[in-house]
Image (cartoon, rainbow, N blue to C red):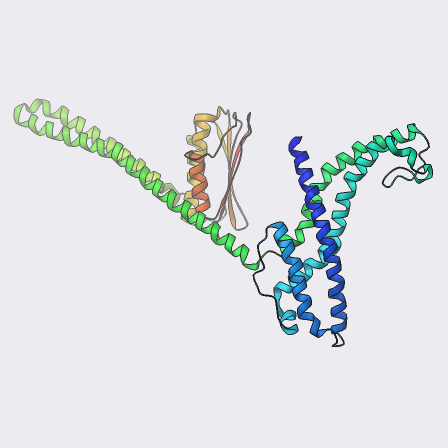
Length: 400
């Protein structure tokens, strides 16, 4: 509740500030209309460039108020340049919207809490108001005694609740034209470049982490088993010279160790890029994951076409990590995997009825999934409230 009240107070502050700038916008709009009308007969053309400078000043003030950054173009110095300048045209569109919609939303945002305050305090000062005038706000019925004033006061909480519900939306509505028309044209590109830099760094980190995982698997598993094979073969060679009857046992143990090393190596290879993706596609790979899950897992697939191998591998590893978490940590009794093409996106979802509370914190497997997904310009959504259920949704672009 306290957070909602803080949001309402913040919205009220923004609306009042926006109302002030809307009043300035109304005056500027009147000036622009006058200059435009005079320019139609040629008289106002010399005033076009100075009017554009005033418009830029008003727009820059709004940019500073909303933290949008400065305009990305100089103020035109001639009437011809003013008419051709796209930044000026966007500022004119904002001026018209803010002088109307911005003024109206700011006025409503200011009036609602005033109505609440007036109604709540009305019993204290209703005697100084003409009875036929009615109560504060849109109330028009006569207020002749304290009972009538208390009825008006009972409407105060209604206005207050309405203010809490409406003001944040009104503030966003008031600022919407500025955020779309006054934002520097290059800012979206700059944000996109920054986003791509971040995802590129995440992709490099994910690649380095994968190399470290492969190195650890080879060093701790396959390499140790191959060392054991070498030791056992050396033992068997010496046994052949000393006691050939004991060599068979050493060779058998060496063969078992070699088979275990091969199995370990196959496991590492499957962890790099599962061969089943090439032979059976994503549908077959997910079917294998669902069948091997320790928790009963249903599968719903709608994959009429294949995506790029790297995209399918990312989806496969996301489902694999999610089902591993379901088996080990969720306490779930059942799980569901769905995968489908939606337009140009591959959407994969893993849900379970477990205890919830999953987090994609740094160092977790889910954080690794997020890095993989973002490296493909995809998105990951996780919903896991305490008590469950948990839903992991991955959206990956996969072309046409």
